[in-house]
Image 1 (cartoon, helix red, strand yellow):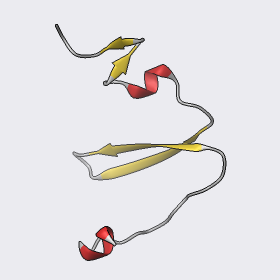
Image 2 (spheres, one colour):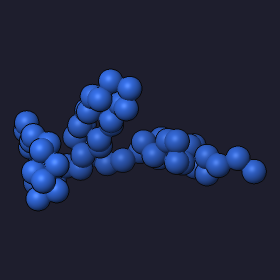
Image 3 (cartoon, one colour):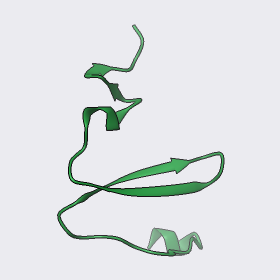
Image 4 (cartoon, rainbow, N blue to C red):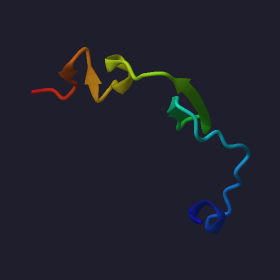
Length: 58
């Protein structure tokens, strides 16, 4: 396993079921949040897609 080979401890797991997961990782604090979601909204893809438009500048 990749995590084990890099000595990264797995503290908990939440898999299966009919709900999706949205993972948010804060690179400054090294914190991770996992939300259970019934469906992804268009705004959940920000900054990749925001309000139905590609976030890249022309």
